View 1 (cartoon, rainbow, N blue to C red):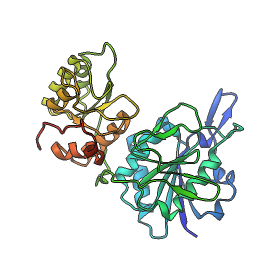
View 2 (view 1 turned 90 degrees about the vertical axis):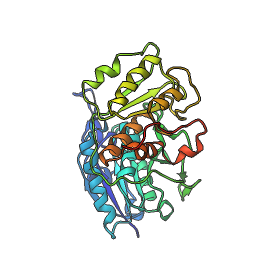
View 3 (view 1 turned 30 degrees about the vertical axis):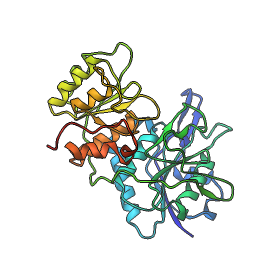
View 4 (view 1 turned 180 degrees about the horizontal axis):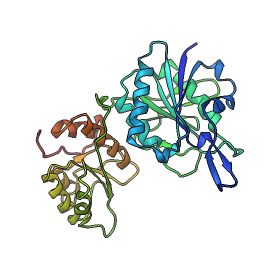
Length: 342
């Protein structure tokens, strides 16, 4: 029987409704959640690691890096065959991607949680945890990187997005599609994972890295104000295929010339920013100014990638290639940064 480490960090899966507080609050530790999930001992030999009951919206880079360090140690243990991380769903799409960039292992790492608290009659925590353990113990997921498992689907960390605030099936991979699904009898992989960004030799995240979302009427001045914070980098969520107002580009160009990496992505939930438009503020003009493209990464994931890549010392074309990712060769309108290596 395979041995699976289950790392509990908190989240809705650990919460119950407190009438005095007026809502769900953390209450269940890892042992209590395992006790609510019968049959796990028939799936794998479990190793419990309890890291508290912190809501996912309270996570910091420091906590994320500490978790990654724990997972590195667990992955290096020859007695451990797979790892499950249990956390709040608010930031799973960011934390799972960060873990994929930080933990170098072929062993399955499965991130799960719950959309309903433990007081709710529709509590999904036990089913999700059971599915996650099944996946972590499955030889079929060896070499697939970090995956997210909720509501019976298996999603790749680099693509998974929380698409609805409260739906049980909120997690979807909008660019490449899910990796697989679970039935009562089997873990079914529907496609190969494909190439991924390399694991970074770092345990450092550089910041701050703010995100600016391009909207109607957002023009100039905002980046200038942000520069007073001395950002390590800036992520721009552009409209459509990478387009913004001309004034936002002008301010960003000044930041790039000052040595601040600026990453361009789309505010759309899927697809990529590229070089298809050449009017002032179009994606082509951003890339010509030195902005870096982030493939199909969403703004939050691009921020994770930039902060960790800078922490690993990447710059110039190496930084651009890392951010663009392996899918960049399949994006016909995606260009490369005009900046040269430092």
